[in-house]
Amino acid sequence: MKKNKSLLKYNTFAIDVDAKYFASFTSFNDLKEIATTKEFINENLLVLGGGSNLLLTKNVDALVLKNDILGIQILKENKSTIDISVGAGENWHEFVMFCVKNNYGGLENLSLIPGNVGAAPMQNIGAYGSEIKDTFLYLEAFNIEKLQLESFTNKDCQFGYRESIFKKELKNKFIILKVVFRLNKTPHQLNTNYGDILKEIELLNIKNPTIKDVSNAVIKIRTRKLPDPKKIGNSGSFFKNPIISKNDFLKLETKYPKIAHYLISENEVKIAAGWLIEKAGWKGKTINNFGVHKNQALVLVNYGGANGSEIHELSNEIIADINLKFNIKLEKEVNII
Image 1 (cartoon, rainbow, N blue to C red):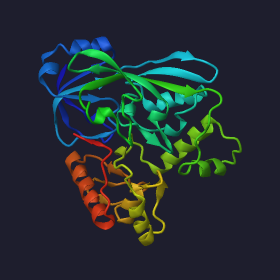
Image 2: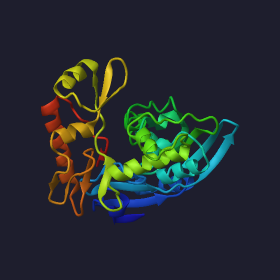
Image 3: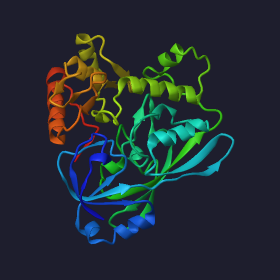
């Protein structure tokens, strides 16, 4: 247990704030032992994985717990599927690369997403037409109040767009320890119809793409569009893509014929938040040492030494401006602490 620990290297936004108390755990038994301490019993808790989906705006008056549970284990397999258990502290992209290398299908569209495995089901991470819920089987989590392990199935998690029960009713009540996925062996239906994946594959002149080809295409697209957190502080997409009614969309389309969108259903349309932010003139805007990324308007960046509260204020200004110009209320995807 450490006091007044800097969290600079534990968040991808590279915000330098201190945690009142800090401890890490590598197993369920480690966590049970920490749970007996006065700090665990008396203080607020903040669980960190890869630190990739949060913005720290002030010193954290809490016990910060770093989840370092590792391990990839094959539980069972047959000719067509394989069930894999993954420690919540494993790096997400490295796990996806393990799957791609072994030709296990289902996660290739989620390549290069920052963060750790434990955060993936919390917010039902997604990209290029795929989401965690598509391959998620169940997870095991530590009940903070009862100090016991509990399992949650796909249905139990109540997955939605960048949502799960762990961001709503069960927020701050459980610590995810491991996640189990059911992936495809053969046959596996590739998902290449979303975004720029098909264009990227066609540019490479690939006629019969593989799981690895799709993963490589996603990595190239993300590398081109998104800043590397190791070089420029960021948390990836800061805002969710808003979903509006088809009637509201048709009104917008009349004014903006090239508005970037995706049909969700007969009555709903998802609008590209990045398009809205760029159209409103925010893309590439820099204020002192932070701003909006020059290549992807969804991403807010810290060029070095920025204050989390300043970045938070910028996000609020963008939300207000988009609401004023398009009558659409953007939601933050990043957790604000």
